[in-house]
Image 1 (spheres, rainbow, N blue to C red):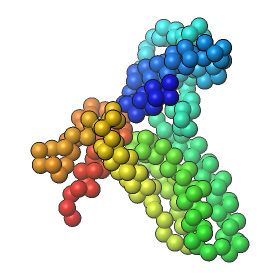
Image 2 (image 1 turned 45 degrees about the vertical axis):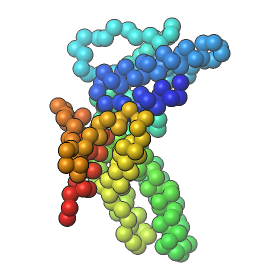
Image 3 (image 1 turned 180 degrees about the vertical axis):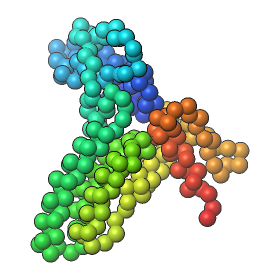
Amino acid sequence: MMADCDWCWHTLQFSTDSVLSCLLSVGQRASSCCRPSAGVLHEFRGSVPGTKRYRAPPAPITVGDSPVNAVESFRFLGSIISQDLKWELNISSITKKAQQRMYFLRQLKKFNLPKTMLVHFYTAIIESILCSSITVWYAAATAKDKGRLQRIIRSAVRVIGCNLPSLQDLFTLRTLKRARRIVADPSHPGQKLFVPLLSGRRLRSIRTKTSRHMNSFFPSAVGLINRARVPH
């Protein structure tokens, strides 16, 4: 069942229909797996994100014998997904966690710890929070939300007293790293999206019809790889 969940997550195209179909598929598999062992599903099974696309109320959905209720947002693999597939709630959650951990960085600074130890603490405790699922949401985030996260990095720079990677640098580094792993893995379902041109120097751009799709992982990754291969 975990292999099926991983496949669903990697092939998610960030459209409302794809998200709903993936969640229902996972729920049906979880329901069938729990039934023979007399397991009980958690409350998560009883909710899926609502959508404003429907003008009329959609037909009721059930997983097993339990109804699935529409919700405004829910947490999936550590990230908050809202009904409009925007990331404001998720970024607010990340900002709150990072600000709480900034307190400990300031306390360590008061104890006159060396900069190297402060940087190690920042990287392990604060930067890891800022980069949580960053390859998924950063390209689609608004400038206001990006600014909130970047202010935390600037605060850490003032506390530590040295330069730190910006949010854009972190996104670029992690996206390129993840994309190269996918390209090197023939068994990954997303590898076919990285198609080289005849010249072999660049990848074929992925055609998109909506800004939501354009700002999702695969089109963003292809664009970053192409820009990284441009000679300076």
